[in-house]
Length: 311
Image (cartoon, rainbow, N blue to C red):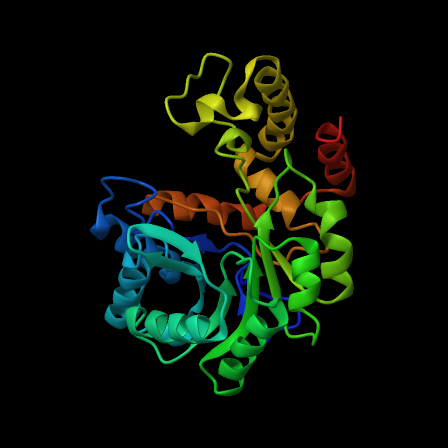
């Protein structure tokens, strides 16, 4: 069955299950990545109708865009894909700073176009805000590029509500990307009223809350990475979160799907959200995420999940 949705007020039509590609060439995030496996999972995504790819300059840095670009070139399927990327990180010596200046953003787009081996980017985000640039001026620079056909839609990521409002002063912002999941629902009150009213589509990142909402952990699971100190993974909080996930597992089991599929399907019932972009490290994970499209939640199930994670 063909599943397609439009992203907010844009003309971009996508499969509501997209692909976050930070594990494709994102060596600074995941050491020892297999680049050929990364390219293969992008090909698998495209071949199976997952046409929304989300990358960024800082994944690698640069390498994720380069590998995605290589796949576009090798498959000849650029026209079938809705490509999102992001810029704002600038190297100053060995330090990284954020730069939203019009000149820097315009150069960032040009550089991304080269790495992606394309002459347009479907959705370009300002990845993080800086402290100096008026946000409407930053977005105004992207609007110029949109008018030139170099980008098709304008996004911002990690902006506060005030920064978003400033950025959208002229109504040019199409998409906001921010953290949102069933364990961190602040966006529902902080952003959703404004984004919904202004036809700005909200694209959530960390949809599985560092894997906790994917249903893969139990009370004996131990962590050696940053999760070992993260609040959701501490003592009684961790056990309480696992209990909530187990309640979702009952719904998933009844539907013969996984917890992750139910969680992603629930996000897509939110009016503010048109598309989700779970990451993947292997091609089989891409195919697994696509099974979400077969999940239909009843009104009662939607309310039940809402209640589980509001308690």
